[in-house]
Amino acid sequence: MKSAGVNEVDAMRGPILRAVSRSFYLSLRVLPTALRDPLSLAYLLARATDTIADTPEPEVELRRESLHNLSAAIQGTTSPTAVITMLKCFAPLQTNAAERALIESLPQLLSWLAAITERDRREVRNVLKKINEGQTLDLKRFESRAEMSALASAAELEEYTYLVAGCVGEFWTRICFAHVSNFSERTESEMVKMGALYGKGLQLINILRDAGSDLRDGRCYFPAEELHSLGLTAEELLQAPAQAEPLLRRWREEAERGIAAGMEYVCAIRSRRVRFATALPALIGARTLALLREAGAESLTRKVKVSRAEVRKITSSTAMTLASRRSLQRMFRRLSS
Image (cartoon, rainbow, N blue to C red; front, side, top):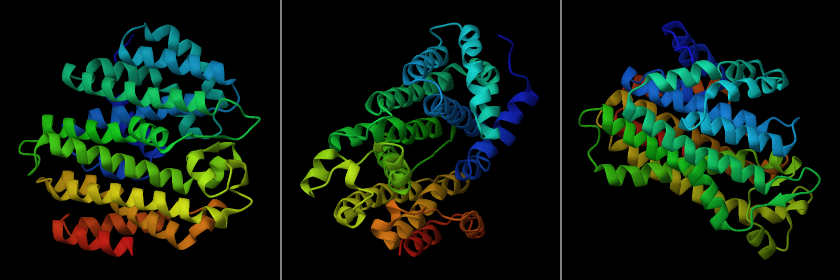
């Protein structure tokens, strides 16, 4: 396969990354190149595999097979050429131009993966292996479009949040320790644990924020066993959202613990640039949780989202403080209230 050129890599970590990610792009653009490349590449590959898994038109079996084959190409266990040919049919199905461009850029992404250092390539492959496992589990658990499906237990939700996000916190940590001298005041093992909690907390926020639209699509990430304890089924959540408030509160609190661990992680980072990039998701997450608390059970029936203007305000405020630990902690407390 032809190697990705400098201009192609610049396009992927610039316009394409900016188009498919609002907050993550803001974090990545301030990082040193040594960090930005493996982190950007891993994010784009994860988004591409997620797009394949989430494209609604093909049958689940085709999506699962395509995800499996793309994952094999990422892991280097199969030739990417045949896989990319098969995946071309997914690009025209994307109604979002950015997602379409992302799928069309898969040849360049795989070439970029082949060109990075062996250590970074190993880390990217390790985290994508876990993410792809989580995506495959998702397709299996929510295979039927005809009926509502829910995760069975809190353990299944814990597994899912780790596979699609907790492992990303671990990956971020290992990449930073590899490339940033004197990265943290805490040990690598401590930071890996906090990074996993941080990632899982952010994923729970996504689940809480998107719960209503997921339910309308027949997916319920809230554990069936916890719904049953409230006398509810997944099918009844949208009809009786007020009854679900104890469940929503329980998982909001779990998400709060995750991003609190994230802020502890942030404040252990010595580099101001890396601290700034790592803090933004926690700050935006804190504000999202505050909006979810304010909305209560209505979050199941209306969209809850931090506006672009508020994201810009959080970003500029963080930059103005030069990401000082004390200022970040004050902002976090204010946004959480």
